[in-house]
Image (cartoon, rainbow, N blue to C red):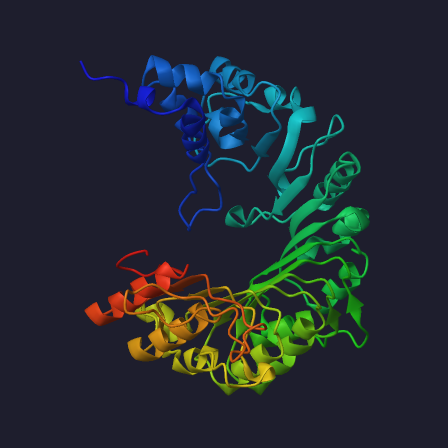
Length: 451
């Protein structure tokens, strides 16, 4: 008789695997995030798995109205009991499917444990008791049914905000920004779906001095755009800023104009090769003294304007180049392949050049997605030059020799590349050169293999 496969794995490994299986996302064309029945499925595999599942309260801590309303009342009660005292992530968006009972009275008994809450404004019910543990709130429109939130919906949301003293993270649309003002000074995380004139945004940001993460989703139509602020908007504590998912340069300009982020560590932005995009992004990025990671989501190819901007960012440690589909590419379902040879050429390290001529001298991680084409020879030359920034070329034995003590090489200002992801099929000779780089400490990921 075959042994239970769970017996071959340590309990902590099984716990981690089970926790990764907790959620599944619904199809793109539906607004709901479905919470799966995976915990119950796991508990029905074997006695061992059932014991592990029932002894892992965190496995049962993600709950949705859709899930509970399709169970009988005893099963719903048991699900919440299995979560013991764990903080709950609760999705209160209504279900489109038939329900067996109303689970809201059961949920109300556990309000003090709710850590994350997702809800439609038009379906928000009165708050009966304080949400003392609520830290993250996501508010959505019930757009599929065409229901607009009335005054009572806004009043109930204001009551909810007042009942959540620990609320620090909010995801809303710009239509609800006035409501965010009630908790703006406490927020450290803000995720905005732009649906109103962008100029309204800056009044809110000025009241959020403690923000550390700020994300923008698409999209504001061009008719609703207004001129950005004439004065500076200072977000002194901001560490992460993303406009990579907004609708275009015009929107990005209105968002970023006048923004100063002196402590920004990570940025994700939309890029369209040209002077306009450079003039939008460069002032914001250069306002940070400690930028470490940059992602550019390109709507076009890359050229001299991107290279010029990257030269102004010598502190970057990680750089990601990805693509955004144009309308033509979207309908053709095939991304246009764009050359990335210019970037690769400029990243190549020449120890005879001056320090200020080295592009991204502290770069350790590089990601170039499959929509960008690179030539193998150019890429390998760049790779070897950056991999051996503090190493010599390999000897006859194939082993790389460090050149740290060689005074003829001015390498103190150049970091060694440690991790690269690129879509490139290497020749046999190229693979041999890759393996030599890997012996020097480089990790490379490509579609065919990982070294």
